[in-house]
Image (cartoon, rainbow, N blue to C red; front, top):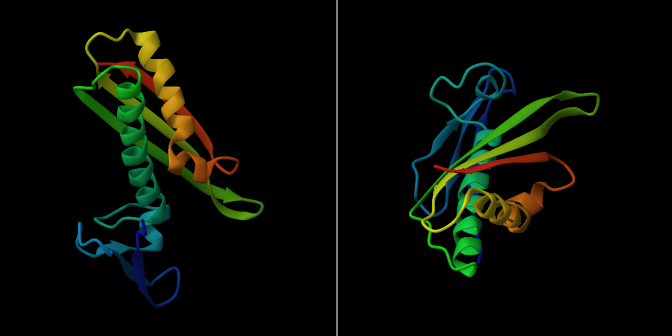
Amino acid sequence: MLSKASANWQGNLFEGAGTTTLESGAAVALPVSWASRTEAANGKTNPEELIAAAHAACFSMALSNELAKAGHLAENLETSALATAGKTDAGWRLLTMALTVRGTVPGLDADGFAAIAVIAKDGCPVSNALAGNVEITLDAALS
């Protein structure tokens, strides 16, 4: 499986702007800017938000799979991912990713849900891509 996205940028870093496009066509060209990374979004996105979106989707898919393998069908999983970026001595870095999931899973208790969520976090391909570079936290609870 290959997944492709592209970006177009015009101007310098601080006053310039660009777009990022998903090859799948699942979304229109998304506007990006430096200001959307460091000040206010103002209707534009940034790479960190896109990574957070990818992580939330990946984790949700991994969790639904791990639940199914354990014999539980999730009625609903609501996942958010909050990416924190900041300037370090080495430059700007993605520092943390906080995953929060609330699930409706009949027949599963809170401890079981939390345990399966940890397995999903550790097995999620996006988590693995970030591992060792970004601190990933998980808050998993039943709805």
